[in-house]
Length: 340
Ligand code: SF4
Image (tube, rainbow, N blue to C red; front, side, top):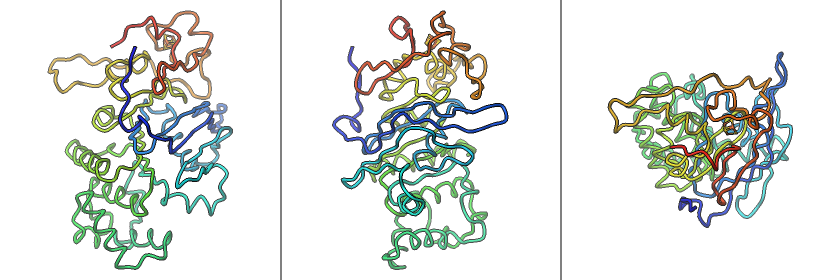
């Protein structure tokens, strides 16, 4: 059996190494295990998509990558090591000051709601200049302006119009593009984007997708997308990690995962998406609901919804099966099932 390996991954070094990461939130109903012992390498220059339904743990994993898990949530186990500029930095061991410095310069995140992320009483230029000034006082105002102008052009916004505007004077798509430009102000090596196209109309989604493609092509930085939008993944991803109940259940090159899925959950997720080439195609919602994360079932966490479940699935949770260095699935029956 041979597997596709994306160019971005082949021969590349990991820029992030996540080991055995566990994140929990206390709740009145018990402890919510949002991320359960995840290990993952992210390679320099690749575009990795974390996909899954709401509550699968993908946003918590993204926040953990910046040590930004909101309290009372906490990282209870594991390490997240960045290999940047010849140094290995465990982000979970940095002080608050070191962390502030590390974020933006090395890794930046674009959150889902651009309006909430921008300061409503400051013009866009002031917000962008403040961001540069507070992290790098050696850059002059003229240099800052030149950098801001270049980035706004990259995200296809007119600097003359946008820089003097307040956030409420811009459309949702323009604000999202401002946030993307802001995230790039300090030349980060890693960019994390949480649902960058959610809550936007279809045309705006398409224009943001084009902007993200240009960034991928022109800047060559490592990008991690957190999304349930499989169409976006199909357009942009090098690799895809499918999350379910706080774990990665399938990982591989985007072509492998989308055309030769090995996990019944990935297969079910793909059947929920319409194909552009088919007019009368039936769509199949995944039966049942995502599990209660404070009271997970025994065995495989997908077994109550899985049409292929057998007795073993109900009593024992499958481990990671590596079919190739970058191809993993976590299912007892993956060898005998023929999906896709
Ligand atoms: Fe389905 Fe069993 Fe595989 Fe889980 S381990 S996905 S229940 S076949």
